[in-house]
Image 1: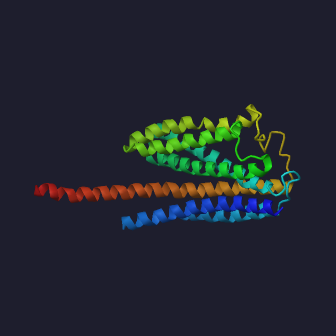
Image 2: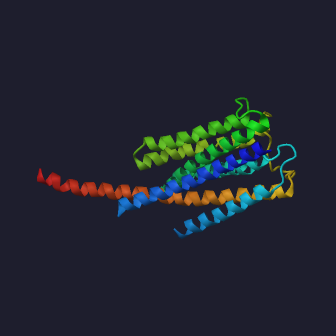
Image 3: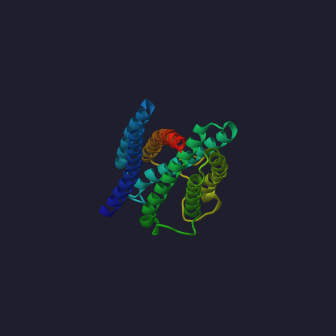
Length: 38
Length: 233
């Protein structure tokens, strides 16, 4: 039972983690580009 | 920027609600708690299909209208599609290991066709990096972006054509055979990930346009500096 729950937590953590990381990468790249532009 | 923020907030709220429904929905009689992985697995696969659909539309529209924004949208969507295909494969493997007894099966039509689709679109992104001329790059990648979409129906119908390990479609023409609470969690996560896709797509296209604008500014600055040097010679 607990191994099932941990597997589910891992799957959700990985999915949400990657999505948030991708969004944050875009944000930091935008800031770097804006700095270069100014 | 305002539209981008609205979609980002909507996506965050929808993801939170989707997570809540996924946690509170009942466990499956056969799969137990593992059924909850299915809500994110199908949603990520759906976003990948939708993203490749946008790439197809953008590619065809570029070939017809030759507007740069259409090419950039196609490219941004392909990147997001590859990202979500990767997530769908990984969540599928995490689910498959305990439920099927194996994380990967080379004899399975859905798994192998999805892997092929992933690499076809990685090839699309690689092609874009090999051509510096924007117009040539847009033309060639539009042709590949249109042809690559053939992989989407191939992946989707693979479970109907070949009866291998992967189960058939979840929503069928005769209705979904699912508990209402599970169906609510499934559909909410599908909608939430669709909002995530829209938010990421808007952000990615704007980022690409900003990068091009910065590159153009820097190139013209270099040109401006080079001219006096040439005059001195």
